[in-house]
Image (cartoon, rainbow, N blue to C red; front, side, top):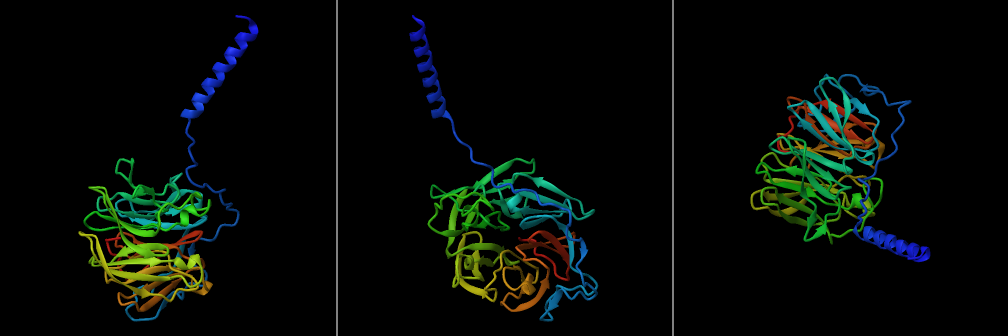
Length: 364
């Protein structure tokens, strides 16, 4: 074989090998957005908010049933330096709080015994809502991963739900676990419409549903399908009521900005008799919520008049009982502390907390 023929044969073989490798190669997408870290040259001050005195003027009672004010306590900023804090969940065995910092693609851990702040997981697949199941495991709604996961006690991660009817979920947002182990979660499209809180990808589901999954059988069902943007979700203490936020106003004026309540059977998955519980949020909206043992609904407030930023508390009948004001728009909240009487508040770039006379319901 002469030199020219040899080179031609070698070139053909190399081209063939490259074609084969290209055919076998797969492209992995990024593990969600990881934003540029925030500078901390002038961090917001920690401790009681400016102007605090007992009783704290940041805590506003509108009804004698409101248990937001202990009388000798104040709203405190306990951590700061985040881009968009969300999805707090308290782990009593370790006395720590986990919460999402969505654009920074991480889950943070705040230890309440000594105030230490650390990164629990990064990347977090742009996790949003988090909760805890009856076995003490972390349940996370991952916007960037378009899935719901369970962090097992050994640290491994189990994917609970990623597809419905053979198509990818939108971007799971928030979850609640019933006493029978079923997981109920909302699935708006916030995490796939841009690259800041997730990854821009096509919407595959026809609707933004509320789902119920039995982790034992893997059975996934859409239980509510008439929301514009289903968001926060919670059960009443007796699990006979299911509360779901619709923040559809983000899609344009005239869309919902309210909390709906449904009669629910957690075992059959039947949801019925839907009605609006509270709707005085526009032009802003509420995002996340939790119930106390009296059945009152504590929910976030933001994106409207800055004077309204913070937390609201509604009775089971929908009456506004009181407000907790913080200097940033609030996305979500949860009860923590060993007595479940410390309210943790995710307020945009900071984590706030205050003691209350209410007791958080064990059922998230």
